[in-house]
Image: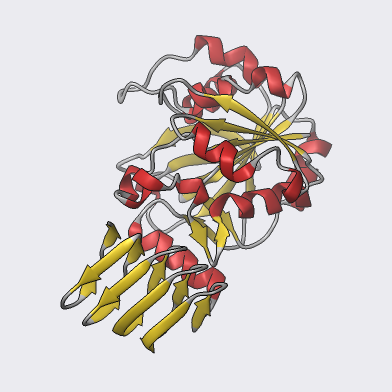
Length: 306
């Protein structure tokens, strides 16, 4: 089995920081976000991984190299323009070369691994197994309908969900996926959706299944979710990176990256990215900061890059 990580997105919900650092490279608890994906794939015995990149290709190659320092063999696959997840995965067909593979969304973080679901995929011989999570508000997600563990319908962001089972960013595919991608049509928003590809597999009578994930899952794409994930990974107190320092009082859930220097009255629920030079006369709260940030007063719920 191989791994495919989708990492071509622009991370627009985290601008302006992601103008400078691709979202998969943003540090969470002083590790790059994508390193947590590497961990989960290696737990499944996967060593060959393709990363689908876009305009961020140079930065991704520069940061990750050939993957050897992570215990992986990395291949980079270019998606020339962003046209959806199914469009992105189509460029990995040659890399996959007929094998089964795990499709992993590069900004997802999971507290536990997927060994049991991987074994279910292998032993069932199904064409596709989708990892599902029970959620409070399914309207934000692709929502699955199951009979037993067989998937009968998949609805993207339904206004009136008939199920609370959301796709949570990790999929096991066999080679039958490549049979449906050429027939896929753009969705209403003009993208080739992975949910539509899976529904097409269902419509054609392929064995498509769901597997429940009973642990914690984070999508790191917004300020709130990024900070929540950082808090989960780093713990309650202050996490100082190498050669980092703080002149001020630290509250809960603070991560200061390698080589960063921070001066403030109080900092809490915030992430300071590596190398930042931050001088704030007041309080820093629920913010992500990078570069040289000098401000009078407070910085509250901001994403700042200067």
